[in-house]
Image (cartoon, helix red, strand yellow):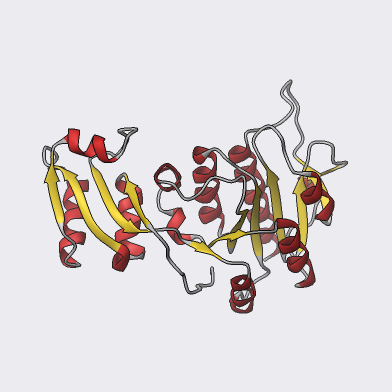
Length: 257
């Protein structure tokens, strides 16, 4: 079971879509300040969200779709938007506190400079499904927890601890000192991920779209591994590769049990 840890929240953010808003109401209702819903919608999904908000005394505004569109420029809000206390970043020093609470071999995902919000959201969703203890990203050259990230993550942005660190290489070295083996995914590696023992405390590191791991990140990993590619393309999309890698860890750990 994933360990819990205290969260320090930051600024106000807009959360859009059924899954993201429902997750916020379920996991951190104290941070939801108000809701806007499309007054033309009266389906069961909207009804459940309204009931949840009213039971927590959260103000609800019934507005036209055009007003929702003005709050979320991409228009992909599904008829519901929440104004939330956001910025669910954890700091480097909180990693040690989390590690003390983990009872099973630690399992971390490290994303090196992923800048596409759809990719980050999809990675968080896979991380939640695979039971990852925490996701670590660098402060610079990475997308934040935007409304798009939250929507694509379908609630995982609230359920998975996300650590934002100023020096990724230093954080990796700190993990290694805690007996966590760090594997970096790189196409030029000689060993396949599927030939690697992933049942001990470990972290997987995946790089940015197109560029892969930065040199210093690559050099700091204990070992580089790869996914076998049988076709003509050289690599998978980072969110697809993340899903494949995380569930190989899940498969191995379930078999070892």
